[in-house]
Image (cartoon, rainbow, N blue to C red; front, side, top):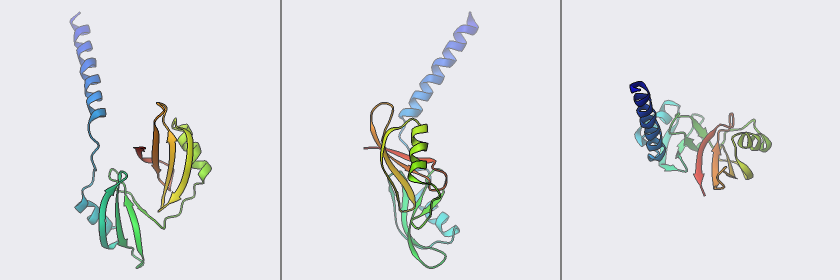
Length: 145
């Protein structure tokens, strides 16, 4: 009987912890100085206008080949996405990835500033804007409309 009570208590605490984690505010992950250092380590210079927007760090920078470019940095992984980046994925590939992830009514799929963006409906009916990796279509950020 005591084992059942202990197990029940552990399950309740685990569920409460998961619920609290789901309600916790999302953090930016990397800090602005860390983003600046990361970009410098990757060969970018003259890094200006660093701002956290749409779930990503954004900045203007000069690339290693001397061109000015806009870059985005995934705050969780530190992956850098330059606006001149090319994607091997098509609009249909992105739609298929989102459908497989449970999204419906997928529309306004665009490749802009080196990142895929789309609007869709979640399973609960809420409209969202989604940012996806140009490399593999991985979902990087979901924002409620």
